[in-house]
Image (cartoon, rainbow, N blue to C red; front, side, top):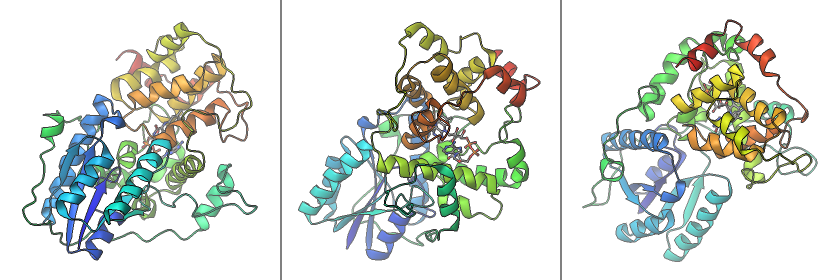
Length: 396
Ligand code: FAD
């Protein structure tokens, strides 16, 4: 038997249920990544991706296999590889959102026709959407605290073992990532890949005991910065949540991540439609929007956050809250425009987390206090009292 493992946002060999299951079920495994232009990655994200793919290929080669990389429509390219390798099945991780569901539906149908059925594996989150549901008939939790309670009490899936050895079908050779992405300099702040992710998490967890006290402190900059790695699946959220060194407050953040994934699975148009339609009315002011985008509002803490985004492709969570609240609640501009800007510039841009958090902040989402508004000056006094963060980015 031959199974194609289609990698998407699970760019790792550790705790990878699709890969582990294929290795158990088939003699030959064909690891495949399809660079689909419809993913529409920014340059900074593509660089991260290119290095993550190169790292994944190295790991697969150490296991005796390799990685095929194809470019084009994900469904067509996967089917082509299935035909070339006479595959008996395709394994892929779960994913949510409108576009992911659309291409999966197509792939499922075409695979069935070809006699190589598609199997999907829970891999993106600690608990998959639907694993815990509220009593009373709803298919997902709308409020975080009861979700956190149920999530903490639930039994999580087992972490799966890395296959010891993989075998490619005869005559098949892998692809160098440079044929698709060219030479890309490593981003020293965020080098892509599983090895970098595991290295970062190991180091960070050793110093994370005080995370609960300082994760909101802007100048301390003490959060894990693992978000791009979690987004591309270079590290398993499930394995991380179980790490004995992981502080509970950080596990709670991973629960927020799961929370938004189950919201997105139930409401796949989260990126464009208000989850809660009341108060989804916004002013139109292109100049104010532009000033916000380029960090030129004149409000120091807001401008600092927006400049961190432009310079680093990442922003501290507290700054994301302040800048998003400023755009929507103070300037009254549409959360969709702000979220689209974040989506374009963030290395960790993630459909569930970005749009879920934007809607939370704008008051159209899952906040139980939708009228909440962060005062930027008071936030700055509280979370950047000496102006260290603000100066760092305004003078940069
Ligand atoms: P840590 O504090 O170390 O937390 C560990 C992990 O928990 C994070 O890597 C992330 O995966 C998860 N996490 C932490 N906070 C949240 C949260 N509020 N919601 C969901 N998951 C969380 N996160 C993204 O991954 N992608 C996005 O596109 C994104 N957009 C956001 C937009 C807005 C307006 C806001 C307010 C938040 C957004 N977040 C997003 C959530 C959060 O800001 C980032 O996950 C966090 O700043 C990443 O830094 P870290 O890895 O150091 O986090």
